[in-house]
Length: 95
Image 1: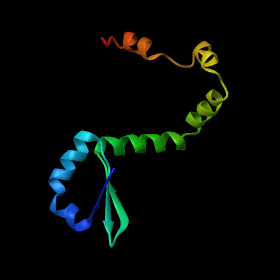
Image 2: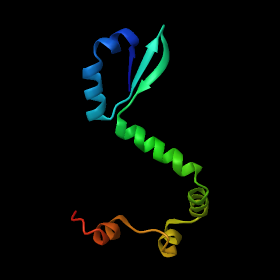
Image 3: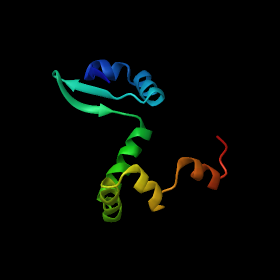
């Protein structure tokens, strides 16, 4: 996580954007010594938005609560979920 003042960030913005995009870093921008904004990669932002949307979906939250009380073995037996390996096979993705 990086922190820069607004003037320094402005002077180096193109370079900082490339760095944030390739390294998935976050940049805190300060003004008057106080944090005022954060710059993150678009991919990370999309992930955050998807997570927020899933928390707003009642069906997803119900499933999370149901699974929260289950052991890993119970989850595997429930057949509600698919393993990554099985998903790769189903989608014909080679590891």
